[in-house]
Image 1 (cartoon, rainbow, N blue to C red):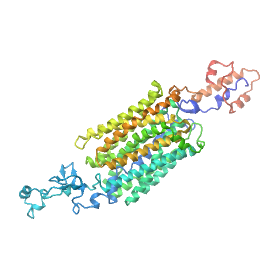
Image 2 (cartoon, helix red, strand yellow):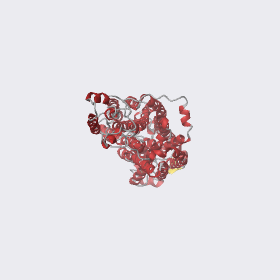
Image 3 (cartoon, rainbow, N blue to C red):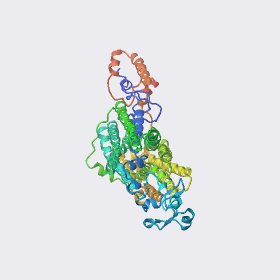
Image 4 (spheres, helix red, strand yellow):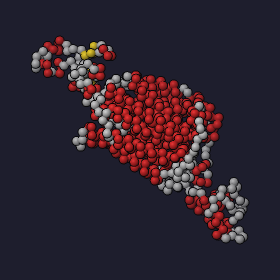
Length: 595
């Protein structure tokens, strides 16, 4: 027995369902390998829990976006509720309104003037004579009307109206709260672990969604949107949890796939809320004001259910149910933010994820108001943007891992630059898609823009874990908070510019400028070259049967030794000792390899 101390290792280590490397981190991503207990399969449980919880969080975060016009009408902030068209016929929102479906303008005989001085042209004399507008019977004809109030929608919420301002402030409040909570999440994750933090976020979101059913005025709409913004912090947990579970060789693919499938909740919200919940409620005879309030309750239930499953079924790390608290030295945040590479990653993530947030908040409203299509059609077009997360963000992570393996860490950085630049190109193209072009053209441009936006996000977080390895949670928090800060900045820009298409062009210029900062990241290459080399599986990746076979063979070898007694072997196998660097001589080659 004294000649075989390595037997201790074969009998004491856990058997994982995934192949693992250093510290028990997985070196593969078997998506369908979900069997086994939490102790034997912590990696894939954490992967799916992080992806599904982020999906549910984003579903709740953007629940009110496709319902924005219904919310506006219920709290009485539409332009035609505040200023009745019959009483205030010269409001700018009315004068420039055109019903694209009917092909009729509010000012049916044209507009005289520009901007705020514009007024509707009077009924021409020829029309007055033809339709007898000066008679009692003729005055009722549509051709005798200077203002076509009948073509106005139920809720006029054009760019420049108070309605648009309130909805924009709600979007801004939702994004702003997420910025703060993402930074705080980095601290909480190192103290409480990803399981506890994600459960707290989901339960807080469920509470905010239930409170959303009581929205009655502008102030509580903006306040509740602020609280709903806590859902954005779920992304920090998603990325940090993957860092704890997966090795560098597959971390880019794992983290981008988990984040991409989670972010897809923002796109699904556009369809789920309108098509599967709101419209069926209307068909049952429920009033608009009640239907949109009931529509948010199923998502609150999903949040509570998801939090309970994560708490009961998942571990923080491969070796432990809960993470040991990490206490950072004083001044750590200031030190992290002085690293120019971290600052560049923050800015660049603001350019890609900030744009995604803005699109999720505004795209359905853009199609519904600017293209004047139904809420269901607008939701379908807007959802195409978010649904690209099904594979686009993963594609960015896979591309980054492949580039790293092929060209070294510089390959990650070059692939990141290419995705950002192409994002700018298609955002610029979106700025030229007017309401006169066919909808399928708009759909194709939206899909291509979304593709490179999501891929840019994937390539960003393929680099983030290597910026400051001793502060992964904190760097992840700051970079992800930068994405939300970018969403706030982009949202304000879309409001201030006051045009339907110009903001897309300015957004494209901003993204291109951020892409030009990429050379700063090349300083990471000197110290991170080893992360792209293949990771060899350690003995932790042995299956349970392999350990049993090794122990059986060890018994046979040890039994041949003089003075061997079985109880001695059982005693040794039960101890927790470290594995020696070199197996003892005299063992068979297969046993030496197994040990």
